[in-house]
Length: 197
Length: 199
Image (cartoon, rainbow over all chains, first blue to last red; front, side):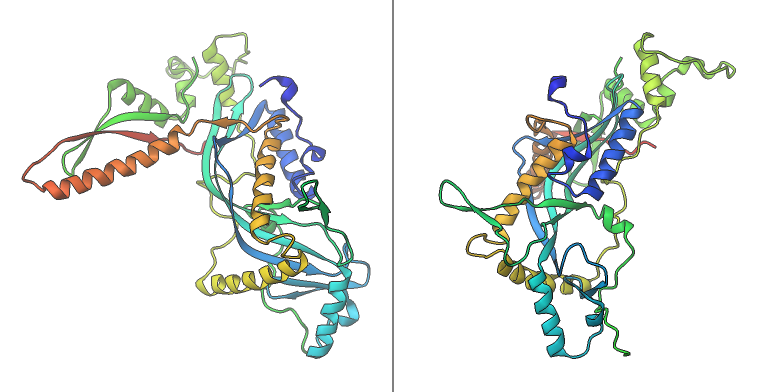
């Protein structure tokens, strides 16, 4: 490969396929590697097509980013509502249904946890001597994809020339092997509603 | 001299029955295997082991290849967020009950997602799987810094892995059919996939 084909790994370069917080981690790792005269290579096996298996889906309803005076209500591990603080406390079922409907109108974004089956070889190579310092192969890894926030009134599809419809936006990777999730505080999977008041 | 690091090693395996495998390595392969099982630093300059410790001499790239290799090996490996196959998973393993709950919520989530993405226009999860696989391929090409295409290598290793399993099955069936009345010696090729994590 010629040097003109190589692109420096920056956040701008990774942004179309990754969220910023994850891209930051990878960019920092690449900078660290290049400062110590190493390069990182991912090699895919010829003809390998990733097989995606959906493991978990979580939906977040409400405005994004959460405005001041709003808090997040977690319903099990698959539903989160960004609601005003006065609606944070569960009163009764009809009221909660109304809160959910209002949150739905404010928009939604999806997070989809998947298992990706793809044989991939990861190498750390010394730039000066081309000595492979570390090589590892994995056939399966976890990835989380996220959609942008959209409301029921947003156009999310665009008509193609062949008459088919295509998403206007792209799915982006929001986590790899629970890298970001492991950094976050553990979230209780039960309903987090204050029943005392 | 380039230091062979984590390559595929081929050896000859002689099997006399399933329970008593005998492994034969050629002398060259033995040397290579022993060389790789030892630390890399010991192979850099074996002549210096009897000498008293001296001041560290900086090795430059203009020196011999062995010196540059030694320099490269002394250079610590940078940390990288990619999870290695030998590393522990980052989150705890789910219990059976959690898996059941996750499965249930997945089904509920799929139905809700179908509603949001208008299932007739965007069949979920089939279309998502197709789109996501494109994103995965592009992600690794971007992490490699490739503008043009994804670098690919041949699939010899994965194919040989399947061959080994097939050979073992055939040889085992063959052994069962023949029992001990017609003892046969099978010679098959065996591949060692040698890899390890270097700190």
